Image (tube, rainbow, N blue to C red; front, side):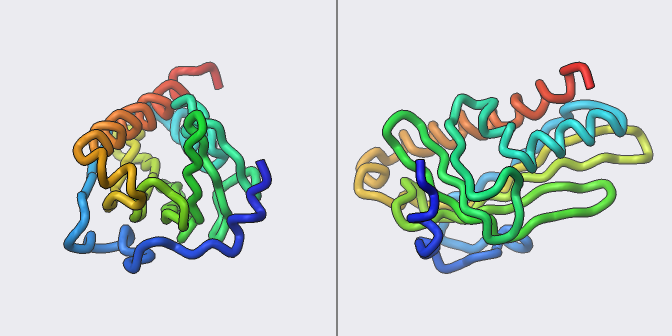
Length: 173
């Protein structure tokens, strides 16, 4: 798939960057986390899987990106069967004990909003945790008609994202 056609696509929501602070009103909110491993090796493995789109691949999504890892302004188009899910990376978190990124939905995405993924390492107890924060609304006619089905799909993929990162921690490093 040629992702270059999405380079000029606009975000399809107004609150770009809002996952870095208080989530905006008027959207469905998701905030969840899970302990996925322990130790520096698990942190590095999970962070690498996240930043290189392997978390998404681990859910069964096809990944097409302008780059091999998440960087600001990178375009990634996820595919679930015939459905195209275009996003642009809004910002990246690159800290010693926290790695992640947020991406926002582009014109043509089934939803409208932003999602933040990050992996944290706690030096105090060695815990590695994965976090997902999102705000969204239906972005296309079929997701508006689908009503609560869209929320169920979002919940399913949120769980799959966390499970995919947890699997990375259990794999031999």
